[in-house]
Amino acid sequence: MASGKWRKPGIARSPAALLIKPYLLENRSKIVIGLLSLIITDVLQLIIPRIIKRAVDDLTAFEADIRHLLYYALYMVGIALFIGVFRYIWRRCLLGTSRRVEEGLRNHLFSHLQTLSPAYFDNAKTGDLMAHATNDIQQIRMAVGMGMVALNDAIVLGLAAIAFMAYINLKLTVFVLIPMPLIVISTRFFSKKMHSRYQEVQAAFSALTEVIRERFAGIRIIKAHHRKSQEASKINEVSDEYVRKNIRLVKVIGAFFPIMLLFSNLSLAIVLYLGGRQTILQVITPGDFVAFISYLGLLTWPMMAMGWVTNLIQRGRASLDRISNILDMTPDIQDRPDAQPLSRMAGRIHFENVSFSYESQEEAPEIKILDHIDLTVEPGQVLGIVGPPGSGKSTLVGLIPRLYDPRGGRILVDGQDIRKLKINDLRSNIALIPQEPFLFAGSIRENITFGNENIAERQLAKAVRAAALSDTIDSFPDRYDTIVGEKGVILSGGQKQRIALARCLLKDARLLILDDPISQVDPETGTSIINSLKQLAGLKTIIIVSHRLSALKHADRIIALDRGRMVESGTHLQLMEFAGYYARTYRLQEIEEELDAA
Image (cartoon, rainbow, N blue to C red; front, side):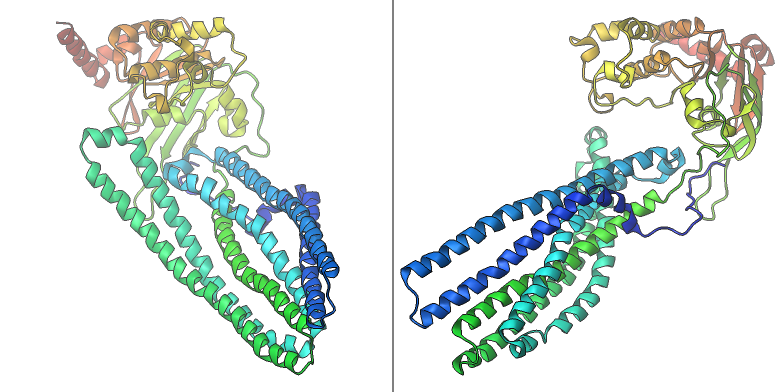
């Protein structure tokens, strides 16, 4: 079944947080070391107010001398050094782990995207996927790294500070903690709003990324049509929407953090009044009073950390939900549990009553692209496919490597239903040139070999000659090492098409599927390419889609499609006698070529 929609797994979706669990378990030793170092750092920070208390008490009692003050100072310097060492360790371990989670998630996302069927990418936006792979994963990394740190400080440092404050004066500590329930209530209230608005911001960022990517990709068209101001306006419009979503989020965050600070200062005011009064009444010593304020200062960060960690976790949770939605997608086209291997294809292709239509959006009626196609191609034969634009030619050849599955009928390779074969085995036996060849931004060699470093120079040169590309490569100073730029920007359409053809011919596949392989080259070069393909006849099964009918004269069989139906079938001579679409189009092209020659 061919589908642009996606099925969720049958079982209930696991919590999104489980996505990062394997990476945390993989780095659990570093996490343990990091957390222990963080706890030690917090404990050492708690010792400093005790030293300050002793120094202040000695000073107020006039019992301090220079030697004692030097000891206190050296103690604090020593503690500061240990704090620095352990802080480095926890940052190295915990933040390093968050980077590894980021790397693992990004690799997992990319690997999963490669398993999805082409129908998914018919509707997915590249900018949206880029936002998932960059901004969303970055937010998850922040939630894992600094979120873990802030949460630990909020618990360990906060509880320990409260314990030390209670040791100094329990009654004063109780009064100081009065604002705490208000912090919990505020956190719960604001966290829900943060989560929904973070999702809106991330969606707006995806839209902005897609619009900018599209404009950069089409910058030459924009300049050629002098639409700079109009496209700039479009960017401004989407950018304004992104800013508007962020402003809505900032309103929530902007209210949340000041409220946390208000409660912290309220506690400080209570200490100044009640603690100062108890100091005057000599219930607590001046050193206790100063230490109490120091502990309250240490408690301020955990109170603020509760807000910050909520901020980080909500942002990370929103991003994790978005990525989880993609990772929960299952491709329509995948190996069956009983899929059979296919070692070496003989090359016999049989279409048995095949029909196909793309799934419609919402309530729109489905448009049938292919309608009851019956066709057989024997091993070593050359099949030509012609027809007007939109007749279903590219869709027909795209069904063979299972880019899509037919909605009706079946396709057999060497007598086996392709849906019962392992997809990797099937596709490894097929070399395909799409209608719009794609080049990567590397060198000509990298594009032809497609990353296969084991290709011998002799094989490479043979494929290049067959694609009529030798003269083009020789014209470049760096020859095979010439960088073609993004999507082969320095090359003409015909040169890109011939590089894609050389890539196809270099692959040792029994079935060649060539979708309009000479549409962008001149007649002489096209003839040279066709002659090279004729030498492969009998050795490989070749299927050629072409609008230039002269390229198909020597095919063993030619079929003509019209509105998804096979309306003509035969050899070149048979179709010329039939005087149908093929014959009319062939004669028109002959006249055009004669006029061009004249």
